[in-house]
Image (cartoon, rainbow, N blue to C red; front, side, top):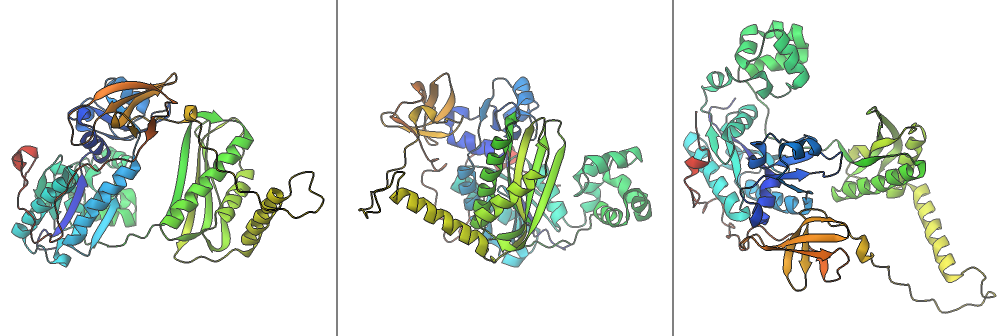
Length: 486
């Protein structure tokens, strides 16, 4: 525990949904749900307006539609979320060299290591300045927790939601924690929480009073010891700048169970290629390929194969995943498939066999292109120009709800919905008034998919930040947005 609240935890408020509201003026102040929209879709994020109707993350989308039938249901736009996340993480990086990202919208910052805070007053000023900078650069709000430990800083940011700041003064930790549910402590999930409840422990005060020996008896030595320390407000975990990823994986849940073995194999190969793309984007390689299969009855099987060395070769990963699939019984149907790579490394051990196979395949294709069936009597001929890749049929385009489009006459807009050969678009921009709605044929050549627009047209220059950071955000009184302090 530190003697000053110099560990900051930032959590962006309803990140995906807030980004969508900022991008779409017509959705501001309305219920917005972002997630999978199919029969088996799951809510990723719900706006606070939707949360008041009972919608929350990880809820099946079908259930959310029953609770909030009039909400806007949108497909995630991860390219936008990553761009905004990079802007936010860039601001955090100016506060300290020790920034520990937990996800796109959440991170710890060691303010002491960056020299931006050494007591409660300077920590609060830095936290308020950070909130102002985030709002100016992205148009979004974030909640800030400040404390002498990571555990307490995260609890503080949760109490600050939405759009607020909570600072926990050193020495007040136990009084703050005592009445809270045991579920606020790291590592206490539904199962552990229920186990403790049956033992008569529902609050952090109950855990502190029970003592270490009783907790060890209930949940085991390692967990019991750590649980008792946390109940006393003790947490010495440092902010770690680089969180080393243990694996890279991708998975898809299908709206309808897959029964065709050939289709299942094709989906596994497609996921393997996507997994390698993520692996390469992270400049990593991996040694163990993992296949995940969830069957029609919700039983989940995993199979793994360890290679001779780390690789980022899509052929190697694809073939390994295919071999693993051969050992899985998919009779009855498959509802989810996933491919992952573990045992990550920063180098690649070249697979000569895979490279040779790739070379042979490329050579075979080149020969076939030069020597079509029937031949030409062995006569050499000038190589034919390569045909252009056929463009995607206009009628086959997908128009995910919420995604960006551009019409040559009406400009930038977003998809409100599509079906029966039609797509409905609302034309507006993040900085415009709510726009008008028009409907087109899905194969209208004037309507094209587009990239997301920035949420703020001309963000201010923060090159000298944090020295020039404003001490309070312009606009409504921050206290009205949840500013509090114990």
